[in-house]
Amino acid sequence: MTDNPIGAVGRLRVVADDLSGAAIAALLAAHHAEMADTSPAESMHALDLTALRDPAVTVWSAWTGDDLLGCGALKELDAEHAEIKSMRTADGHTGRGVAAAVLAHLVAVGRERGYRRLSLETGAEDFFAPARRLYLRHGFTECGPFGDYSADPLSRFFTLRLVPG
Image (tube, rainbow, N blue to C red; front, top):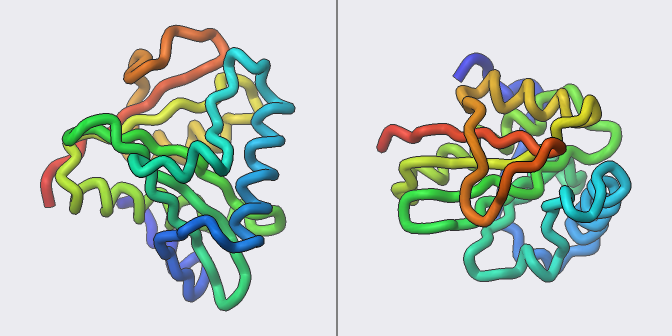
């Protein structure tokens, strides 16, 4: 890893979240609404709270004290491949390393679970440029559509090969 993202945000705690709290529900609702406002329906792949409760999905939330700073999720596609979903930094906390810390946590969990690859879809528009830079900085490379995705000019796909650790 190229930096120490956890140090950038102080004492960040990343925990598995059961999605029952008001703070995580509000953050994910805001994420879903922003994605719906940013992308046409056929190109919007953000999961709502109901879809995030699927047993194939695990959501983690990132906290400092009682403050929710962000979240991210892994959706198992098969025994060797998972998709990163719902990466979100809370308003007022962008640019502080929260997303990098959550991403590092997701990659570590992916290795622990024995996945050989993590993949993700994000938007192609300028709005998503910071997310694309984050993934590239952390070793992800562009790839074609995976899973149930199909080619879409408004989507970009990335993958990271995992070395068992």
